[in-house]
Length: 264
Image (tube, rainbow, N blue to C red; front, side, top):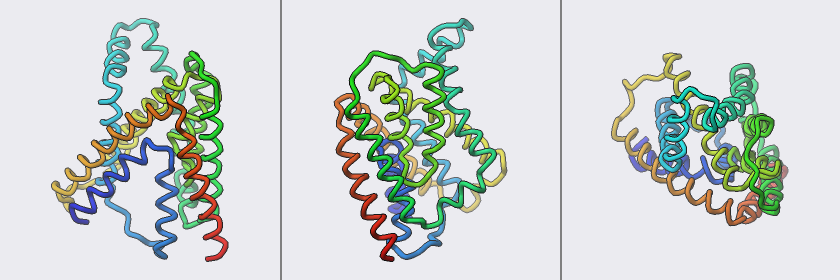
């Protein structure tokens, strides 16, 4: 991998972490189009670096919220910040259990099943369309909402289901205010990313012996700045009910994927 590859991968990671188009689904389609099901995976360290960059971009965008949460938690009272943190923890449970108990089974979904990706992209398109048409409310995320949103995040492991698209759409369809839905969706993934990083580091699988710091730094910066842009843009799109454009895109790509899968 050279510096240009690292930058391109960083930009893709930064954008697709927040925009509702399913990065995993597009990866599977790309492998199918290239006719190569054995494209070498990037190093685990590089992947961890990119995910850390997008997590950091989320923290920067929501720095006031993050600061308020930590300040509230250290008051050691049952306040709004403590209640919000509890909801974040509740939302993590389904994805965490899925990752711990069914990690090997989940890998089977990433085996070039192009029609599956197409169908899941259409599901994403439907969710985005329905969320875009939902009425504005002032409702906040409840504990039960957090659990349901967490389940949708776990389901988003399927290639073609967008994590941000699924969680934001689920929140809005549950009646949550659109701005609060976007805020919760982006903040809920930060602990999962950090937890996955800690797990990978703790496992001993990560080594810097063969990795170039310039390449890692280039990928990190590209993912960080692309993430800043995509996160801020996505918040505005949700507020202004502009998700239909992404719904149409996912529908079109999904139909093409289904057709490609059946004729190939």
